[in-house]
Image 1 (cartoon, each protein chain N blue to C red):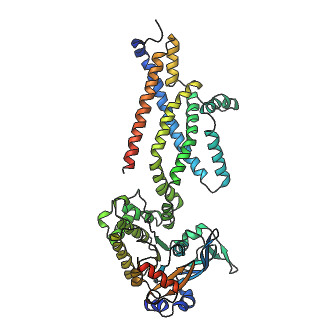
Image 2 (image 1 turned 60 degrees about the vertical axis):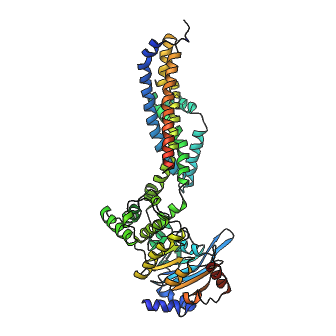
Image 3 (image 1 turned 90 degrees about the vertical axis):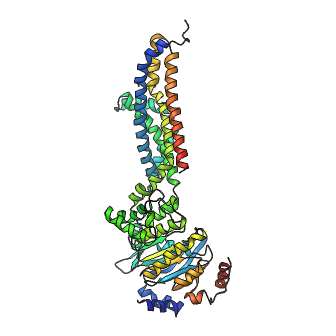
Length: 280
Length: 220
């Protein structure tokens, strides 16, 4: 799908496009996905189809299920109902000979989720390793590259996020913004098709937010990457997203282009949420 | 002359015998610590597997070892096992007894260290697709061990003092040497005082050292 088509799919016919056109070509699909913790329903029968190269911003009040979507998409948690498909493979299922779906385990999920990378709110860098070693870790132990090749690639990635001068520093010696950029480089190391960003600037001091957003923005503009971003940075979302999903109470209550969802929301709940966030 | 008088000549003359015992005490501590660290780690891993019967067995073993006196365990190893055809030298028996006894508390310490690892570390490792072996060897254990190192050190200091129990199963370690040379002339003041001093100097010095390492660690 060309960029123009993606934009049409995302912008011109938001709801119908997402549900009817996208599934066949979707890079990632969720069908009827639900997640409960005890009595509480976090996500309620979500259908979501993400086209290749699409940049989607997930907004909504805390506890509305945005982060849970990302954790499901990378297989950190298992849905209670529904299926998740990434790049043509089911995350927790396979097709049986008869055509039906049967559940499969962790091993299978590991292979499928390799196409997905995630950047966490609290960076989650390995504190006992240098920035370089953090990025090298998946290259050596997942891709099985030699140390020399891994080093070269890790240096490239860290240079890309502007940290060439800090290769040997441990996370504790870096600012929050720098740590988050190392985390982004580390996730990029495996060249995932889909990148997930989970409130990547929420734990940062205000003056460090822009350096991280700049890196994410660059990624969005220069890569063919598909992105799902949970964010409270509405301006940022408006700027780089092709599509915005508004979550409330475990459901997607609004799905459309940023110009529509953020500027002319149809739902009262969205208007209320945007007002609250913008007035912060 | 009362036997409570301090006799420097006698004290000097028994020093070589005490130092031989001291050497054995140090060896026993080192070997015992190695056993405790390795078996303790193995127990911790068993306790954390998803196989319920392994977890149960390891937990039961730890509870049993911690719930019975080391002296009783040493006696069983020394007097009972040979009757079932299992025997080793007194020294080896003592070292195994000490090592296994301390492996139980080391296992608790490891577990605390592993449980103290932030969930985000597991999540980062898993979402990067690192193989589970690497998650343990490269991410979880290096961090857990670093935080529990002072506590493991304290276990070694405690074990160093407890090696004196090996004297009850005929191992000629420091205390056994002291009582042995004391019994020859029925003079116990010098050998026991010197033995006590040796225990104190080493354990106090080590404890101080561990505390300094701990402070350095906390201060980064």
